[in-house]
Image (cartoon, rainbow, N blue to C red; front, side, top):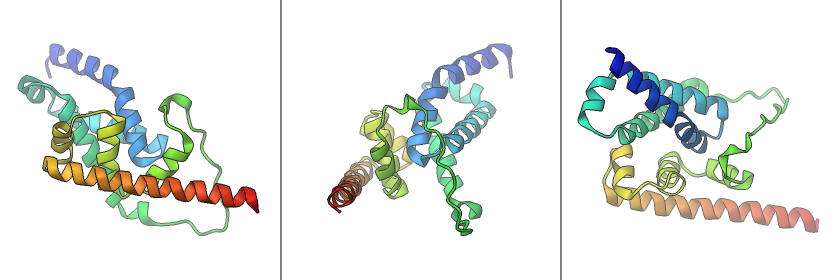
Length: 171
């Protein structure tokens, strides 16, 4: 890669790493996995940087790569295994830079993956429907329906949390 392309990629990666990390965290709920996803996405983007950069804005393509990395990671067999040794792992420290409450993060984890992706990109990353459709490789109508269903699932999860908290206080 030419030095000009290399420098422009470094600048892009420096400017977009934190927003991508936040989006990845909202998708997966794990800071370490979010960092891995962003790193993988940036490596894949680096490989095609000169070509992608010439074609125009790179943000949508980068989000699309990040989404594919996350979906691929969810399909990996070791992610579905559960350690049933009776020991509860320590909760990881959650940095305060998400701007999202813990209850919302826990509720978001209960939303199915494609719906969660639509909700995160549409409402957390504040992208228009057209850009979300490009990132998710689907129609705008699908984005709207997945986001609506995701919001319904999110509301239901938040309601369950609220009901559990209220019943826990009254017991």
